[in-house]
Length: 597
Image (cartoon, rainbow, N blue to C red; front, side):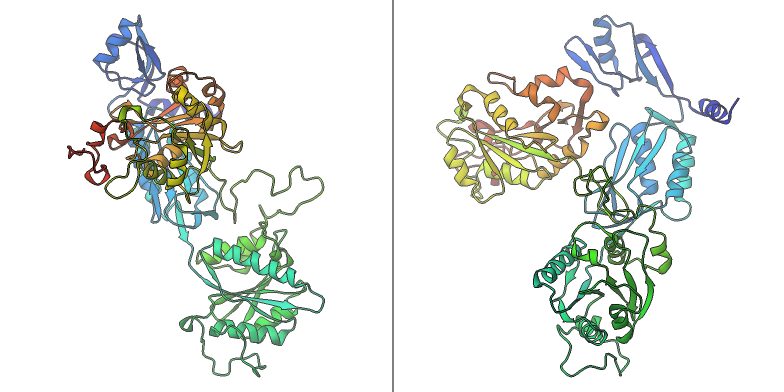
């Protein structure tokens, strides 16, 4: 018997959870393995069966169900995922709430993710029931970016297995750490030679400023100088001292006092030199200018292409780099590998540069199947992680508001002076959904005027009087081709916040089968609803005064429900009586005082 089989024999002895067909008389407390319809009721995967659910199944003619049954010592999937997430959590990382055995870890700030790959491998090797997936080591992340996901595979984990994982995670250094970017002031020296076009210099400055800004830094006014050692040294000294240009007559290139006049006086924290002619040797004019300014050269060259000819030096404690010619381009290159680490406060040594070869082949070549700017983005050292699928927001604001006549509910200002449609759109804009499409119909000009100046796109539904489906179809038809999905928001639900919408966006994952996402409160389904593009054709076929909710029953296996902390996702406001239940500040003046909920 091979080692792999022996390992699974041992796991089977440890794994106490029972799984398989269970007679209904023994199924109370068991966990449904697959969604089943029992008459009018849908009993979903993951439901803990109670007497009512069992009665519904029996009435539907079921004698047994496929389910998981927990034994003493088993830890349910959500609790197990939360415990493992807590054991690997470190400062500047946040965790999501557990759902379907999954907890996501998110960055709280921009920075560089460090991953102890050996520890992650050891955690994943403990048992097949526990998994941790992460971004690569040295991945660049922005606030709220997903950096890792903990997924419990079965419905429960033996407590002994989970304890082993928690103990391992707590030993030694953290498995995941986030080094935040520092707001460095960057000094740039750009050398010039006769015949060099000014547009080339401007392009170089623009590309450098974009890199620095992306990493939360500030580019000081660039210093242009002649392409020679003395001029470069004087320019560097001026940037260290906080001067925008070297003092007239100071040609020594030295600092006789030996004092460091930089940081206290607003000088540069990081120094960059871009030559009119590419650096070709550690004794070339750029590196020589660093040495003349009192610095030293630590390393010349790196195994990243483009970026081979970078020169790493320092003046005092300040890193000083002579950049290769690829610095003129905004495309990813070796410069980015180095700058991200420096902004994260990590030392970059000669040895660090030499270890950047794996993953360092970035250069285009004739046989490459896709140019880099057209290829799918893949997280790697020095790169931002692949962006989440783009989800458009469709705000339905075309209805005639007949139930609140003579008022148009969307246009009546509340006691703060803000209309309902403006509040709804502002909430959507505070989320990550983009672009935001507002569907217009009844009193379209008035709605458009109220929303003027906001970054939204207006979509006109000429058949809006035919019912809700006409407005919905107009919005879905206008979703851009590069949007993977659309979240449909109702114009009369002002209590749904951007944070709630972001929770729905975070749950959307077509690769894991979560292609329809909707909010719930105490198990009752609400709005807004998110639809993967694969359902657009069915939505465009809807007629009459109805939405797309009936499609949920047809595609129950790809539905993800996100439980919310309050009932905002259930509350629309389309009558005068319903307006009286709004918080006082959100009620129009003509609505009598009611009981706010």
